[in-house]
Image 1 (tube, rainbow, N blue to C red):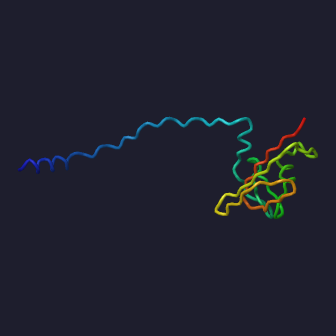
Image 2 (cartoon, rainbow, N blue to C red; image 1 turned 180 degrees about the horizontal axis):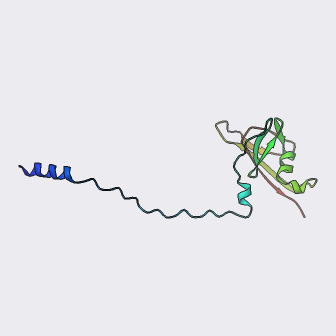
Length: 126
């Protein structure tokens, strides 16, 4: 037998090395700001005749085809109803290929679409 044949037969009898998984560190615990968990809720199933949108991370079911700047401000800050903000910005975007995004000013409306994401920032003078 030649040395090459000896090597081939020795390689055939050796078992393949066992796959050893490297130890993984446990995942770091996610820390949230106060009330962050409530603002980051998963999208619920829409009720009949309602469109689900997220306003500041909270899902709301709305009827109709459009939402106005004032309506979105009332949804975002229900405890400030009747008070006029010193300044307010309302931005929106829709996930997906449609690319619906923009800013609303007082008097503007946005067409409602399921999954619309709205961010409302307002400053109320004290």
